Figure 1 (tube, helix red, strand yellow):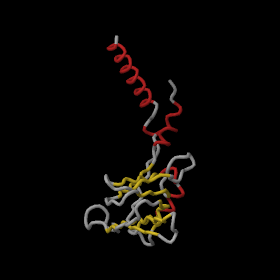
Figure 2 (tube, one colour):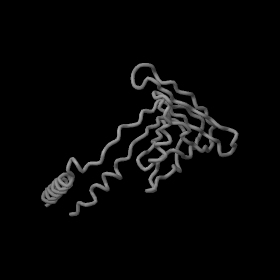
Figure 3 (cartoon, one colour):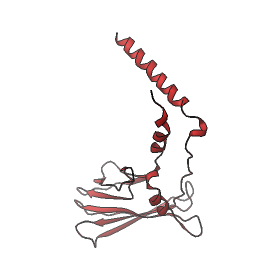
Figure 4 (spheres, rainbow, N blue to C red):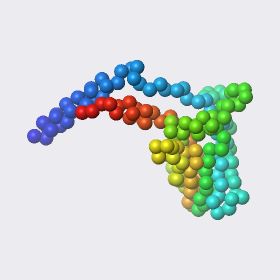
Length: 175
């Protein structure tokens, strides 16, 4: 009996998958913009307990992947503190004049997501991300909270959000 249920589920899954893929012609797929080139990102950390305690940290890689290693500032935050965090600059310095990519990301925030990933052992968490028109996190601003003194790395990834476009594309398919 369990084998028949698994088989029915598998057949149903294949049928739904087939209908979903047949519901989308190649011409119906959303256009995917090329990723912006970002040569410089600067984050601003403002201590919520002392607004004069402002830390700026910059990551800069003017020659892109390969070549010279990026120049990365060291960020020293106070333990057991809460910071207002913002993406202060997002630049493409390969262009003349320098292109402020942050303005584009802000204008199209519903298509973007900043993912903050502290390394294991780094006592830094992020919450309270700014939201787009669909109430989804963007990450241009956030709250950063430190715990006990620690050290590590912080990886920040800018992702394009195609999920909303794909969901809209598949709204016509009903089973």
